[in-house]
Image (cartoon, rainbow, N blue to C red; front, top):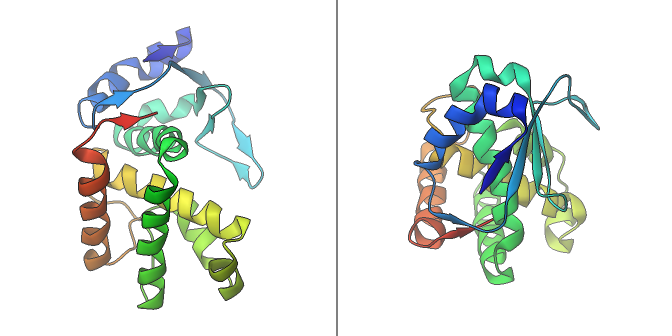
Length: 183
């Protein structure tokens, strides 16, 4: 399922094999895992990036120094592949969960990639399902997957209140854990 370039296997191979035991059963094509130095995204330095069409994930090799943080980021990146395979009905169900949270005043998120997008939303984004909204929804899904499945109980980026976390965990249990996760 995962093919490593030589540096990635040395840096991350054993960690990935342990993480796979924590995830729902995965099914899908091969994803190439690469180790790189100094990854950059639109906003500056990043830890990793998923390239969905190319079916690869690039990680900053410095993540190998922190196994728990690598686990959180690995699961987040794998979740991007799962997100694009979900049916429209399941993605809309996740959106509905997030809309309800926002309507009820839920603050915080389960990762910075969702948090900064959430903070930038305007009411028109929710109602119009703009690109900003859809990007937030995807990142929230991926951050929540990382919170659910990575071996990290606490993290400074886990700022969403417990009651909302439980609802999200229940959603994942209903829609993903009882089934295979297509990636």
